[in-house]
Amino acid sequence: MNLTERINADMKDAMKAGDKLKLETLRMMRAAIIEFEKNGSGNAMEATDELKIVSNAAKKRKDAIEMYDTHGRTELADKERAELAIIEQYMPAMMSDDEVRAELRTIITQLGAASPSDVGKVMGAAMKTLKGKADGTAVQRLAKELLGA
Image 1 (cartoon, rainbow, N blue to C red):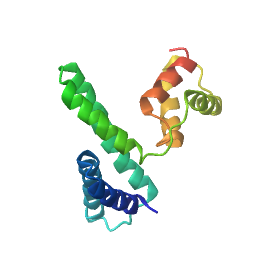
Image 2 (tube, rainbow, N blue to C red):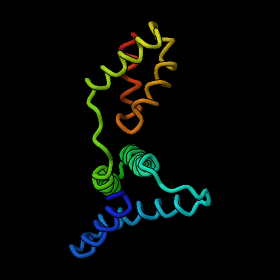
Image 3 (cartoon, helix red, strand yellow):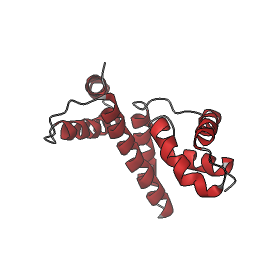
């Protein structure tokens, strides 16, 4: 079952259950998928495209949560957190810090990186390998830690 089919099925379940927040969140994700499909490129949606749509939706929620928390709007931040929890159900499982560290050590060895000035080079290679599997902020933090930055 691809992402579109899964979202459509879950939308039906949310309608039946009367879960307005879940229904609203799923409709937003479905709209993003439809927008992608109708962008005129003529390309069929692939798993990487689905991941990109879900990741963008999650990032928007995280940014909104941060902004609302900064400005003391806890009720809006809580709504965004609830939406983020729904969106995260459609994301692949993220790698743990230990798994990311192990992958980064391999990349650092391959590139011959040794100093903090090599973080950019390591990040470029790491994000190609870890895209969708690990959070970019965590990858950067761990890369700096391993390179002594």
